[in-house]
Image 1 (cartoon, one colour):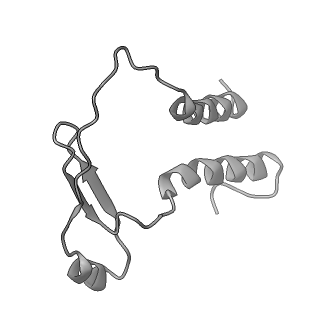
Image 2: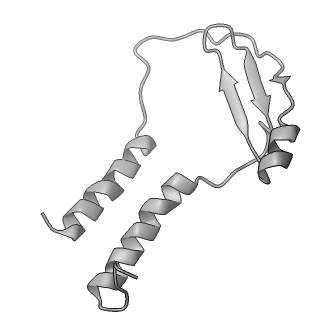
Length: 99
């Protein structure tokens, strides 16, 4: 299997999240609950970054969040495209993997 096949397969895996899932039966949504917040500012200050966290209990609708309304870059998603671009540069002779 060559690199192009692997990269195409990995790219296709990213599209799985775009598929629509039809519910089997109507599901009653729980009443919205105001998010409970907790303070992670001390951890952010000690580590020198920003954290974002949100979790929802599907049964009760209870939400626990820290910076739940903010948007964050998904680094793991970006890494796949960076690796693909790097391998293309290596294949074109513009880069070396041992550098």
